[in-house]
Image (cartoon, rainbow, N blue to C red; front, side, top):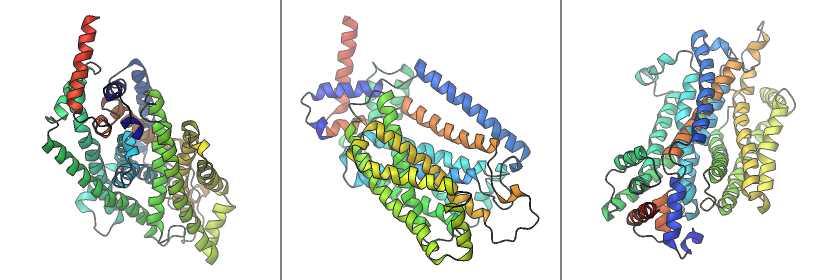
Length: 461
């Protein structure tokens, strides 16, 4: 933010900030085409879910031994990506990192989208989704599944508040800054701004509310990933029977969420023409953050395999052999090297913390994060303690079906739809907060003044 604060012409800078933020809002021809492609893809992939509802889970690769597949791996991945909202806004925000301001709302959008769809992913894994409500009516407090659903729901609610409440002043600003927005958006902004006038009482209430939410979301976010890890760690299965799964899942979520945010930063910076606000400095800082969280995650990866590898119990030996040199070896080493170690080493060097290299490395890490969850979920179920006799091959070894892949793809498309809609119909940049950090004391009044000037200029032309 120092670069902004040092700008002499604050009025000119603020006018550009308003224009740059307002420009992408509303429906454009390119946006309609993009949404059409997403909706068409979603309709096709949801047809796969219709076939699953009609015929049952037998259309998937799930069987008696491997009863959790892509859907659960996808759920763990989505929950992991949703952590980025807490990480950026709460951890870095409460630590006083001012540089996160332009990307904080984008982080919250990504968090909301992934957290909301994570709950739907769980339903896709159910053979009888019509019985989902039984979990709340008859759920047992001893069940980690009930804990997981509870904390996910709580996290979604807090994330929505944390996204909406700081945006209230921006909605008031853009409801008055009418020259750039579609009329319908202006009316919606006026209603959602809740009569914001920028009084000292309102500012104090916003700050206090946001601070409470930032403090609350930290334990809730940690609980999400810890409880999700307990779904695995609370069993005696080899590969899952671990006491480090809680922090292991949390650190892995930091990596996945940070990668998702960097990809979003690159996309919106270029497509929404926000290079003056999401700068190379932000990519450099996020690269350093990624190096830090990746080093911690690498430590837990080493610990996960070093301890059972040193003891090498019979069943652990079979599982580790399948990962290191057996059926899953190619995927395992691709994930460890291409999805973590190589990007980590490259990001240490400044030249790779530029926007394009960061995009490529973040895509590798995000893809690697998804396949890492696949490797956590699947291989350990292929080595059950139960004896296997006279069982068809497909009942022992898991292979996703086309329908299963289609339903999984639908969840990704739904996340992109949510992110697209939130970024198109609401301000992507936190204008009010950025203006205050730049030394503008009354952003609302200055916005009205600029709007009046533009209207006068338009009439004269």
